[in-house]
Image (cartoon, rainbow, N blue to C red; front, top):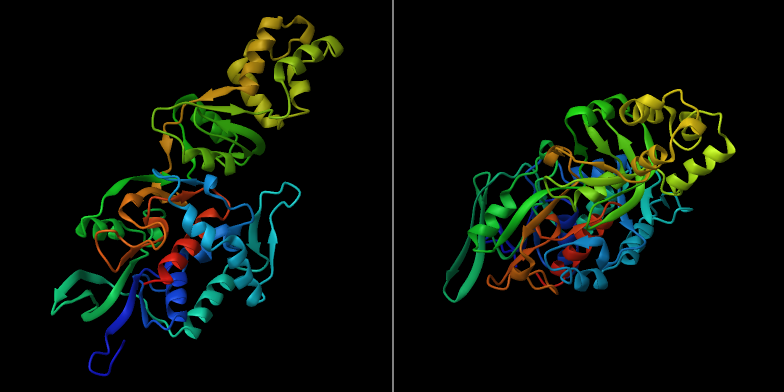
Length: 409
């Protein structure tokens, strides 16, 4: 415990004042542990504040292990089962924060604050205060060491000219996403310093970019959104897509980006509720004198129909359906239901919501998040190789993994 002779000694030092770091500090502090949070930014919880368009999609009603990506898909099960979405919702209710489910008729389970993400951060700050947690911001960390002497082990952290020590050290340093908010590879560097394996990282939940004619098309369609199915050989998502001046965004694109590998093509179904071939051939029988775009304008945005027409069937711009060969209609239908696109890349960490990969889960206890080879060292949140789907799942992993560590650190 902290003493007068050593005021800079703590039971637990948490590196990172984001969602995971604050929750871990609260959990440990509530057990009577003396906790210090060191945050490099000028304020805590920056990603909390900007998340969900400023309303913080703080969890998801349908949280389950299948919503997470990891080299070990079983690793997340323990923490998620012991601190569930209902536990965090209970905390939100305790602080009387008004919230709602986005699109309840769709049932996607995404929960947002009615007012502002500031409510969630204020809740976490209040809980930290109640648990006696000390929070230092603008803490530039120059050195971290594990010191063994006189049959004792402690961690030593040098920050802003001060030296802090603790029995336990928690890495809650986040990933590489959104570097303008202070994201760095510091957590991965520390993990390697302690001889922990770090899996390759890349941007997840991030828009696709294109080059050439498809890029020109998406620029012209920038701002247009519609429901669709976007897929590759490993995953399929039926949600909205959004054309941008750089490529393709929207929930379906962000979701699929986490399963995409450079050089792969993806498939876009613009008519997820219709079998396009059947629709076009039937329209040829029932509306033989209309042009193709008239039929398609009823089910797709007009601007999109126009650009598809210019790119894929310019010879039939003003041709009546009766005069278009069935084989040509079938080819057009294949574009509508299975438009093959090859992204040039993604927008990368600049706009990514998460970082895939990170500290190898084989290095950690799934029950406590403690490093198997470094007693007293814990790794939680985004820095670990567990990444959730879009929709509040990454916050729930932050809460759950932090709780697991905070219960024992």
